[in-house]
Length: 264
Image (cartoon, rainbow, N blue to C red; front, side, top):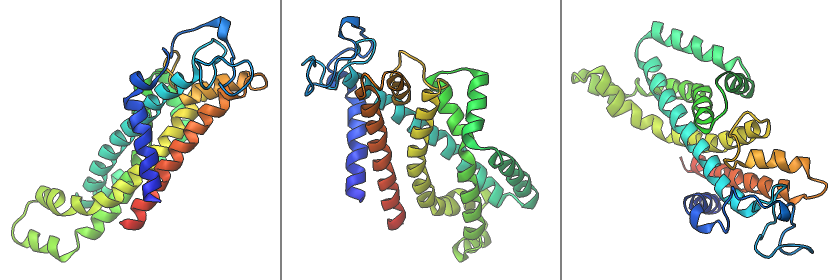
């Protein structure tokens, strides 16, 4: 499972990084005379467009390749923001005393009371749609699960004998947290982060599908799904191939996360 997951994830990353080399066409180039051409194996296909074209005559394969950049950037960037903020808050809540712990956990409880996707949609509708906004908002909405897990582990680890020994030797609170507690919460945090990448990829696709995420002409798999839905009866490939890209990427990330969890 780990090998398959790593293979899929590394392939997606390689495609995203090498997009300018791999993409056979300019993803923004419109050729209305070639609109809705089928994949290369179907009758009426244009041999220069392997997966066909969309309703504006843009090469579908090139847009899927560049769409990998958008999805992986949102997944990795959102997890980086959420993980950094959540781990920091969780460490503070678990080590700074009861009053601070209670105050932080009430904030966490309030945010958890809102459905995440509805909270994201509300914020995006207010601040506007852009790739940067999607990354930041998804990161700020998903930090609470890191904070909860890290806070619980911090409360448990700080009672261990090696922490008590360091405290008896005069180690400061900051040193105890950074040197002795933080390494203990990293494995669990890494598993959560891996699984969260797939969650954020799906969230970005959902937002783009609804028109609240990444805006054209930047290619995004969710936007391509929304555009493909409008012409599905005439050109099924415009929705199926972006959907398969989402499916494979999310599957690979989840398999990698499951493997890391089992090996932890």
